[in-house]
Length: 431
Image 1 (tube, helix red, strand yellow):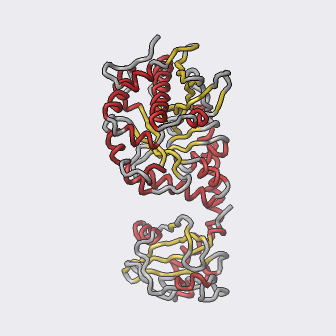
Image 2 (cartoon, helix red, strand yellow; image 1 turned 180 degrees about the vertical axis):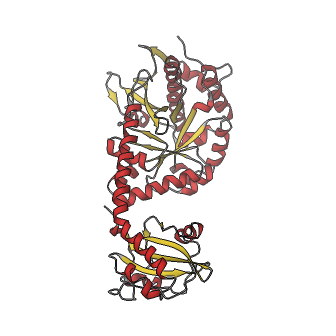
Image 3 (cartoon, rainbow, N blue to C red; image 1 turned 90 degrees about the vertical axis):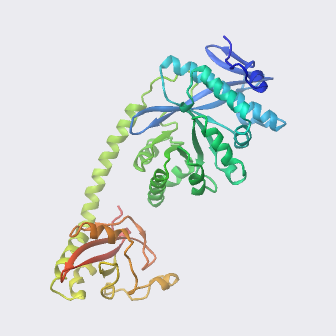
C-alpha cells in the first residue's frame, strides 16, 4: 500500500510521501535512523458524554528501536527548511493514520494537529504547499472541517504576518485552536484578534484552581469570557477524578487527559469514558445539592434580616430599620440607593466598626456617601425583580479591602423605588 499524494503536489510533499510505509497495520515514516509513529489521545465533550475528537501526537524511535522524546528528533534538524519538512511529515503521517483508523471505527470526530508556530506562519503563506496539503486530505477522504490546527500564543506577539497566515488557513475550511492558553503571558487580545474556534486551557490553570476556591471561581469566569468571545473551551491535562469534577464545574466544553484516555497507537474505538462522565455529572449534581442546602442555612439569617429591614423602612428611621441587620456577624456596611443608584442616606456601619477603612491603603474608597452604584449587578438585578433578595458573586469590597458579597432588595417608599443593600464578608458564607 502506498501513501497518497495528489497530482501536482509540491516537490517537498512528494518527497515526504515516499518516506511513509505501512507496518503492522499502521503508517510509519522513516527519517534516517528515526522511525516516526502516530498516537491519538481522545478529546471528550462533557455535554455529549463521548469523544468528539483526537489529538495526534508524535512518537519517535531511534536506530536501536528505543523510544526517544520527539523533542530530540526535532533538535537534530539543522535548518528551518528541515524543520518545515519534518513538521509537514508529521501531519502527513497523522492524517494517513487517522483516516485509516477512523474509517475502520466509523468515527467522524475532529483531528487535532499541532503545528510549530514559525512553520504555521511560513507555511500558510506558501500557497502551493498549502493547496497541496488541502488536496492531500481531500484525496484521503478527510474533510477540512474535521481538521483542527493547534497553534500556541507565543508566535502572535512576535510575527507581524500571523494574522495573514490565519486568514489563509481559514480559507481552507479548517478550525483553529489556541493552545496552552493560561501558560506564561496569556492575553485576551490574541483571542479577540484571531477568533479561534477552540481555546485549550493549560493544565497549570487547572492545578492552581484545584488548590484554591478563589482561583476556581476566576477560572469559571475565564471560561465564561472565552464563551462570550465565541470560542469553545477545552481543558487539557485532566488526570484525576477531582480535576475532572472541577473541569465540569467550571463549564468547559471539552476535556483531554489521562482521566479519560491515554494516547494510543491503535484503533480509535469507544471507551468507558462515557460512563465516567455520567458518573461525574451525578457526583456534581449531588455536591451542588448539598452545597445549596448548606449555603441556604448560612445565608438564611442575612436574607431574613434584610427582608425585615425592608419592611421596617416603611415606618421606621433608617438606622433603626437596619439595626438587626447590622448586628449580624460579618456585615460590613448597609446603604440605601435611589432609582439612579445614588445614596439616599449616609451608609451605616456595625456599632463596633469605625468609619475609617480598616485597611489604610484603601482609605480613598471609604464610606462614599456621594457615590453612584447604578451599574453594579446587585442594583440592576434588584430593580429588575422588586421584593426579591439578590446576592452577588464574591468580589473585593471597597470598604475593608476584603472579599464580600452584596445582598440587595428593591422596595417602594412614597411611591418611588429604592434599593437596600448590605455588604457581608464572604468568609461568613464559605464552607
